[in-house]
Image (cartoon, rainbow, N blue to C red):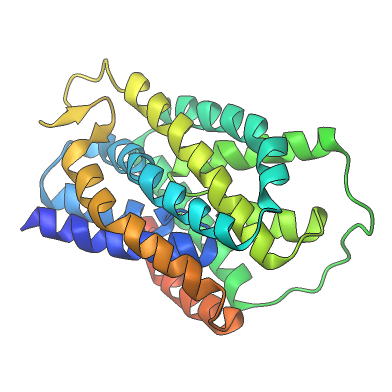
Length: 262
């Protein structure tokens, strides 16, 4: 029964990854926390298991999404090669930071972060952005920070990377989404390895777990998410983006409240 729920989570993970280049973690992490709590996993490592498993499940999803976007535009390749380094460094740092934080603290941080993202999806803010592209050193630091937050909270690089690429790299939204899908794959690879090794010495891990990776959840999500990521990437080229973002923003308000207040 629980494995079927992992398959369902994979469907939503894939669709969100393809539609927004976010990796699906904004939905996967809260879903896994609810399922792990129901299965009575140790409370003190609940968030770590959810984040590690979310990143592990993102590997196939983000690869499928990036490959699909690559069929529509090759312009994302230079962006990926340019910023894969800082994203990878950030992913490693994020896992190390999370390993030294309490599960409940991470849950509240996740909820607050989700609320911030929800606001950006629901309301359009007018700001004065630089007319010239920022320097690579500035962008390197920025992308390292994006990788750190993404890995620490188990989300894709698109959540923060999408506005960065669209506004500071001056690329189209479709190219930005494709680049974020590719960089989310990078986050998932380095983040997964980091959570695997940082959790190896944890004594109260549940069965079928290596480090902070719970394999039944990863397997279930990966069985469905790649196919729906491919579908989501195709839909992203055709559906009205504004209406989709607002609908997603409303959903995130409820997700954030659940994470913060339990």
